[in-house]
Length: 173
Image 1 (tube, rainbow, N blue to C red):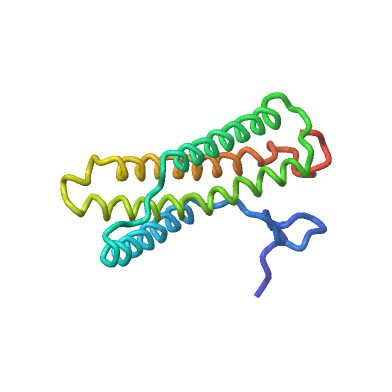
Image 2: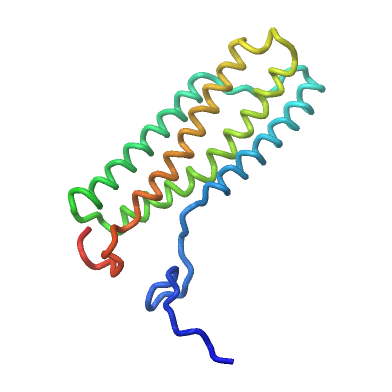
C-alpha cells in the first residue's frame, strides 16, 4: 500500500517540535462555563442549606472584571490594527505575552462566570422575591463582565495571528 504524499503539517513549524500554544476553541469555553455553572449550583446548594446564604460577587469585583474585559478588547483591537492594517512590527515577546493573556482569559473567565451564574440561578430558585434583589443583579452583572472577558480573550488570541503570507515570522508584520 502506498503512503500518502508528503504534506507539511499545518500545526508544525519547520525546525519545531510540534508543540505550541493553540487557540482556544469556543466549545472549550462553553464546556468550561457549563462546568463552572454546575460547580456554582452545587456550592450554592451546599452552602445555602447549611448557612442560608451563598457566596456573592460585589459591585467592585464585577466592575474589575468589566475593566479586564475592556483591557482585553483594547489589546485585541490594537494588536489586530498593528498586524493587519498598519502593517507594522510587533515585538515577538509582546505578542506572546498578549497571546498568553488572551488564552488565560479565555480559559479562566468562563469557569468563574459559570460559577457565579450557577449561584445566581440558585438565588432565583429561592422565590420571586430574589429575582430582582441587589445580590442577584450584582451576580448577573459580574457574569456578563466575565463572559465579555472570555469573548475578549478569544478576540485577543485571534488578533495575535499573523496575516497570510507572514508565516516565516521574520518579516515585520
